[in-house]
Length: 552
Image (cartoon, rainbow, N blue to C red):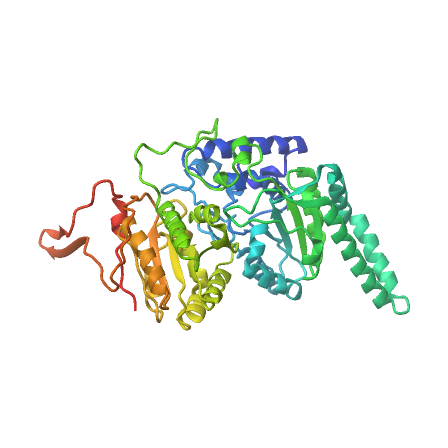
């Protein structure tokens, strides 16, 4: 194992392979106690090693989309001794964090930010006339996010030196033609091939009407790449998972944006990755390298259950088994929400569930399995999810948009402009309200009450317990029939199943759970507590923290 990224440059090819094995083992063993994003990081071991072999951080900049896959990068940049503290109090952050290391040039936690941030760094570099490389590593899921396409649309006209790496873990190379893909990758990355291609194009342009001929030749090359890719790539049989990942394999997509496309190449072949990255460093035009990786590579349990091992808690490193639930343990809040959605949709065909690539996290997967015709997953596209729901609401439907509290912030203007101002009956169920201790500040759901209460024609609710969650969902569906949007927030943790019969809540009223009074005297602060009611047996203690708040 290495202690500094400069050590990676001194290793032989054989030692690089051994390093990949060691890092993968450290990931599996090191995350067993506290959990984390194991699957995605197992998939980028070789890519991370190749990046540090070719580039030099912190001078060169690595910008990771979401940045949940930076564990290997952290291990290679002097943080291996603290790696097993990741996602714990006073430990390493689970995402890239500028204040944690000079090798983390940009922090993240939400999807779709990397291309824009990296382009901004390239523009700043060009203004300063410096020579650092900026490498943007973005997953195929980022291409379901509108911000990514806004950035792609600006790269060509902003800079001549940009390196993007599409980390695609949802496509597979057909076994019988896999060598063709590797050959095409080597060919398009070959300096000799590219020099000949450039010289040939310059020669064409000197001929009569040569510019037109060269343009036709470029279009023919793009078409050929598109045909070749359709032969060597095929969609994976597994459906889009909880993180909205779906493959994007055509060169035409990027080349129409004016970007040079290289690949697809094997993301677990270190020599091929190194040679391709070395070539990308020499390009004086924006480049996108399409890298095919396998989420969970090297760990059988993660390969068998990729959705589970995308992000999980503690597990047995030898077997991959997670601790079984305790006897009589209450269900999770999101499970209560998912089952209630099924009841609502079965009762009322106008109710539909919408998620932004989090069917498991929100438990709308329960709805997908029970009533698939009333379920939509729009990918990592929160703004689209809200406006999509608004459109359905104009046609007499009652959409329920299930989004984590922290992610709904991304669609704030859409809530105001498209839902509230038109007084449309859209229900927002915000999961993960409150603190997110393991994931940190990028995932805290603290601000929803503040930013929603100031919007017009909106009724806000926060359940004090899981019974009220169900009651509020039935209330929201009934109130939505008469217009108005209704956000309801639910925290993370365990819940109580509650009675089968549901009651409607009275709007504008709450109930006092705890009254605190503080005063300062000579002996220091004195605090008194008065409880308005006792906690029902078997109910989650933490569930009582969130009280309903009246809306407008």
